[in-house]
Image (cartoon, rainbow, N blue to C red; front, side):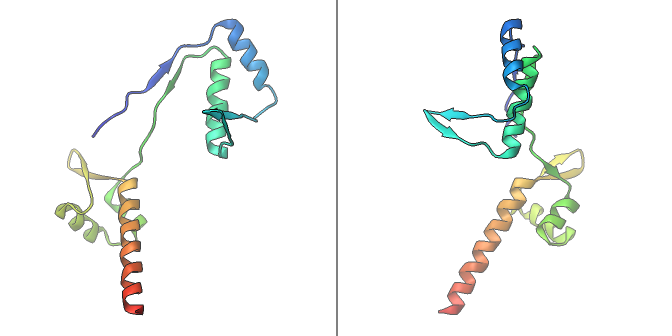
Length: 132
């Protein structure tokens, strides 16, 4: 499993922190420019950026990292709408990647979502073939 190291950014100098805090006061409107193009952030991304900027505005040191949700086999089976036993058999056959925490299996939510998408595509293709 590849881990991306968290990024740590030192707090801003006092003058920069005050200016940023003043800019954020009473505002949640953040405009992002990427290669000169304006992008409107979805609410969750906007909230994360405002929180990050507010922390920097207080002069805090900030660490940014990501979290990938790991599921138990029971949670993964429920999400996929299949039995726990069927899911365990699929992990044994290597059809769904699994990681072990001691003797406990953990499955990435993204792996279940990918498997579900593959199943939808297969069902759609099978339906298209029977319709012809």
